[in-house]
Image (cartoon, rainbow, N blue to C red):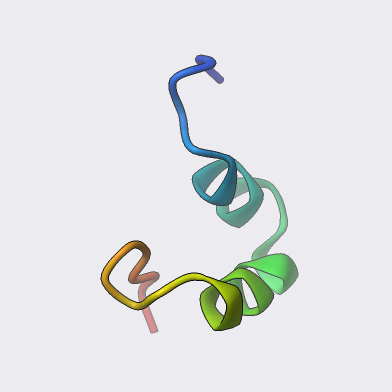
Amino acid sequence: MPAKTPIYLKAANNKKGKKFKLRDILSPDMISPPL
């Protein structure tokens, strides 16, 4: 992945389990993964 890709996006793409944990930390406006 390019270095420009945000860390939370990389984590969401690499580990779906961590995606939900990142959702709790980051604001819904920053990241909105498909439900």
